[in-house]
Image (tube, rainbow, N blue to C red; front, side, top):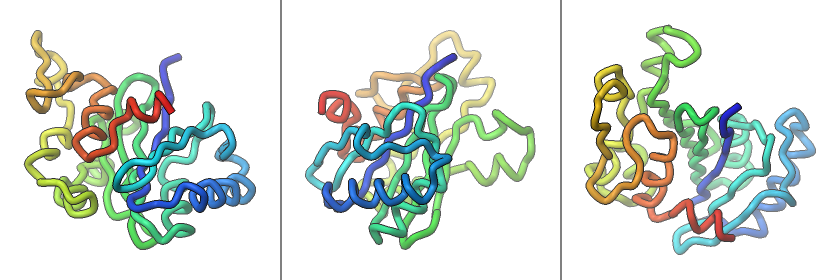
Length: 185
């Protein structure tokens, strides 16, 4: 079994309030297996990062619940079974964008492919970054990319290539929320 990981960025969030809200969510939604005391929190210049406890499984419902309780922008990022990464972006209590580089991982449904296409402009607007600095992450991992002998990185200064679930860390760094700060917290 591979890695299942969930992390979130709460733009302009307050750590104490976030911890309190996560405790409430854990009580309200026990099926998420969320334990606010076992999560790792890190304050960044423009918000708070959260590395969720092992076995937490909230994904988009957790992002929406946290966004609604905090009245804040929440970007939920995840790694699914070491196979791929993705995100759910919530604002004003509702999801406004989602992305997966393998949108047909579970179902070869064209509707799922469209639903998980991602919108670089939404991320750029919410996190005050230039769209051209993040748009090459929000790319479907097609056979051409995955079958290539020399997988490429999205940007020259990245560590992870297309096809590597840790591309998520490069993406977070470009948003100003480096993942390694959460690992070291």
